[in-house]
Image (cartoon, rainbow, N blue to C red; front, top):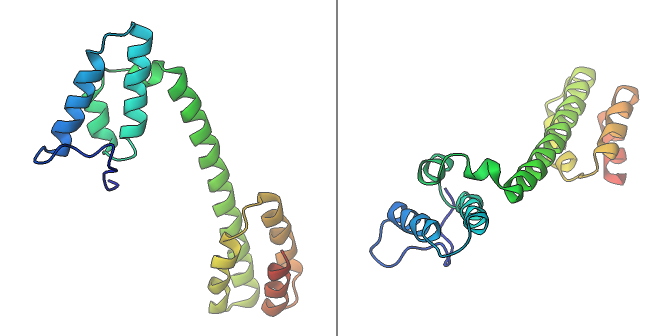
Length: 148
């Protein structure tokens, strides 16, 4: 759980869980149309999820409210895409390190991981992966990595 931001912080002496419940109740009872209320509840769930445990959010919001929100579906799709890309990056980095460890049998290979993790471009990482088996030395690969 992240520290509470000033906007999400409960009033002095109020338990954070009780504050979340109060926010959900106030949003649920707001004098707005159903579509707006559902959007507000879904938004509360998304932004509350940055501070509170997901299970706590799920227990306090009406069932299915998040999934029904177009805002949440878009948020979820973007999160999934970022997760897939992050997984591809991590997998490619791990493959590069595995190939280099196998080829050079050196503990120094692991020291390259922080440098590889600074590369955001998956295509660039894939090029390094393809170059790894043909690299003559760990030093040569490291120089190639510094140029990337």
